[in-house]
Length: 441
Image 1 (spheres, rainbow, N blue to C red):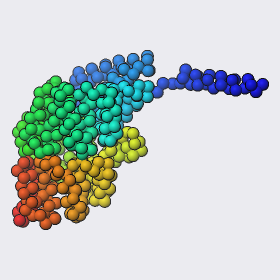
Image 2: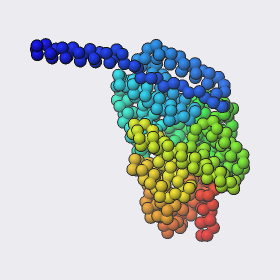
Image 3: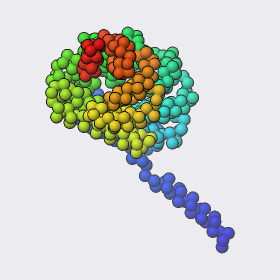
Image 4: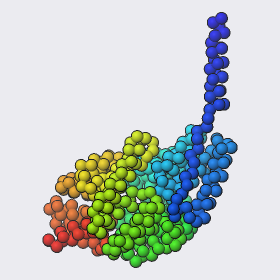
C-alpha cells in the first residue's frame, strides 16, 4: 500500500494548494474617504469621486486588473497631496503598488510611483534604489530622472542631482523639470536664477491644477526669502483665485502678514489652512504666532500638537521600515521650541545618521548644538551646511551666530548682515538675536 501513499499525498497537497487559489479572498481594495469642509466644494471633488468610483467598480469586477490598480494608486497619491492625509492614502497607494509589482516586478510606472512614495515618506535611500531600478528599464522617461534628482538632493549628492535634472530637461522640459532646476539653483545660491526657473514652471502648468498651485506657492516663498513681500503676496493671491481655499496659499498669506507684524490676521490665515489640510507645519507656525501675539497658553498647545503629529509619524515609520513618514528633522526643531534640548539632539542625530551629506540636515544638527551651547560642534556641521554656497537667509544668520560664538566676530557679522539684507523680514527671534550681536559689536 505504501507505493500508493506518496502519490495520494501529492494529489491531496495539489488539491489543497489549488483550493487556496480558487477560494482565497482577494485583498480588500482601499476605499476613497469623504472630503470635508472647503475641500468638498467645487467640481474637482465631484470629478475625483467619479473617476475613483469607476476604478473601484472595475476592481470589484476584476480584482487582478493591474492597470486599474495603478491608476487608483496614482489617484490616491494625488488625494494625499490635496487633503494632507498621507498616512492613509500613501499606505493605500503602496498596498496597490506592491500588489502590482508582486506580479509584474518590472512594471516601470509602478516602480516610478513606488519611488515617489518612498521619497514622500522620506525613505530617500529606498526611493533612490527603486528609481534606479526603474531607469534601467526605461532610460528615456523624464519623470524617472526627476525622481533620481530628488533622491540625490535629499541624500546630499548635489552634483549627481544636477546631472539628473539636466537629463530630465533634455527629455521633457515642463513644470516638473523647471521646478527641479529652480530648487538646485537655490541650493547653489542663485536666487534670481531660481525665481526665473520657478516662474517658467508656473507658466508651463495648467491654471487651477494642484501641481501648478504648488509651483506658484514655491515661487511666492522664493520671493519671501528675498524680502519681496509684494510679489510673494501676489503669487499667493493668484493661487487662491485659481484654486480657492488652497491651504498652502493661505499659509503663504499668513507668513506675509506675520512679516508685517499683523499677527491676528496671520493667525486667522493659518487657522483656515489648518482646518483644511492636515499638516504639522501649520501648528508649528501657529506656535510662533501665538507667542508673538502674547498668547503663551495657545502657543504651548500648538507646540504640543505639532510634536504629537510628528511623533505619530515617527512611531509609524519605526514600526514599519517599508512605510511611514520619517520626521526626525522636523521633530528636532519642534523640541527646540519646547526647550527639550536632549530630545532635539536625539532626533537630529537620527536624521543625520540617515543622510549626513544633506546641507539642511547639517544645518539642523548645527543649530541644535548651538542651542545646547556646544559651539565647536555647531561650527563643524555648519561648515558642511555652507558648502554649496547657499544664500538662504536663515542659514546665513545661523552661520553668523555660530561663527561669532567661535571667536570669528568679523565673519559672523558679515554673514548676519548678508542674511538681513537678503531678507529683512527674517524670523523675528533669529533676526533679533543677530541684530543684538551687531549692536554689541
